[in-house]
Amino acid sequence: MAAIGVHLGCTSACVAVYKDGRADVVANDAGDRVTPAVVAYSENEEVVGLAAKQSRIRNISNTVMKVKQILGRSSDDPQALKYITESKCSVIEKNGKLRYKIDTGEETKFVNPGDVARLIFSKMKETAHSVLGSDANDVVITVPFDFGEKQKNALGEAARAAGFNVLRLIHEPSAALLAYGIGQDSPAGKSNILVFKLGGTSLSISVMEVNSGIYRVISTNTDDNIGGTQFTETLAQHLASEFQRARFELLCSPLFNKCIEAIRALLEQSGFAADDINKVVLCGGSSRIPRLQQLIKDLFPAVELLNSIPPDEVIPIGAAIEAGILIGKENILVEDSLKIECSAKDILVKGIDESGANSFTVLFPSGTPLPARRQHTLQAPGSISSVCLELYESEGKNSAKEENKFAQVILQDLNKKENGLHDILAVLTMKRDGSLHVTCTDQETGKCEAITIEVAS
Image 1 (cartoon, helix red, strand yellow):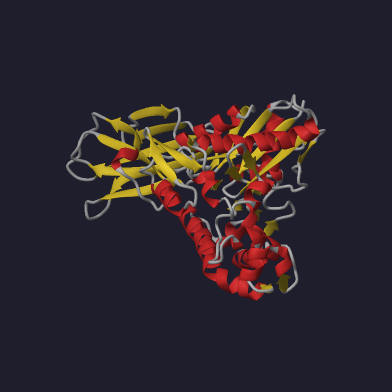
Image 2 (cartoon, helix red, strand yellow):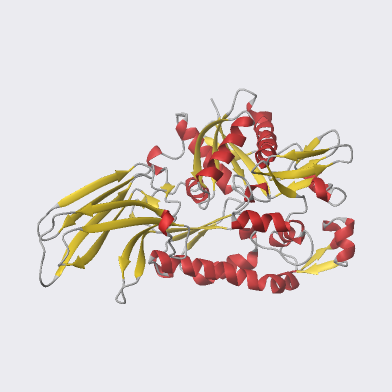
């Protein structure tokens, strides 16, 4: 049997198959290895991929793009609100659910974002079947770190509605590591790996559709000038006859700097310095841009930059390898022990600072490879007889809200002290499946309490 890996990105989708001991990306019916994640609706048909993208100018109000940004989200979600504001295809709330309003002239219909994703997955399945045959439906789907359970469920449901048998959903950076055969520990010892995920929506400039129509050509061409014939006639007229690489890099320079600052922030949050990183894995279409790659090399001058696999293909290749592992293929190129899962959100512990205000300490930053183990010492006044360790989850920036508290451990009947503090040692172990085991021990008496949270994040 063969297996399939699918990556549905914001601007494009890609499918890879595992067969005969290796994983390869499959080209679609247009000969392209990456398919635009675009669906266009007309009176009588639904068009997916390149044809939908090419017709978007004359049918923009009925063309759905970047559905991944709204999939599984509600109308009060800040990201959904931003998407609704920017979308050229009208998005409304109907019966408590977000729907695309499609008006073809003859009728008006309201389309579920999940149905749009289903059509894209169907296109990926059709592409995979072109080389595997219709019996191969076992698939691994990739998801971003910031996807919550609702987004994950919506993505999985769309894939199943397309006829896939979903074996597992794995994080995109985890798939990228699998594509390069990277495990949690290198043979020579501990290895720290940075996965740089930069998708097609991460960069844009003011000219319409230059993001997907221009930077891709520039980033793979070493010439200084890119001829207008590379684009549609409308864009060529808009941009004159040439678009210089230097001009492109100048326009995008603020965005490049934001990308580098995001990496610096991640390093600071995780407690690593640039010198602690051994390898950098590039994935996502925008990470092909030469200038951006050079900035990453400047930040990590001594590391190995892994980009031998095209960045927009590395994630589906890793997903296909994972699918091959799960169906038990023989002669698999990556051993099962190299499967990598990571924490999806920050896990924080609540404390009190010197002023008496609440403070939060990140124990497991999002993206921590699993399994992982952390220790934390909680101090409390000796005058109290019970101490509570509270755990929160957050999507970043060291922020946490009361409603995001997901667990607490209470140590009771402690010996009171007139002077001094209680020292409570908390040991937290997160397993590959995301379950979290927490043990709290009073260092003076040895009194201990422990809990296990089956799904931590």
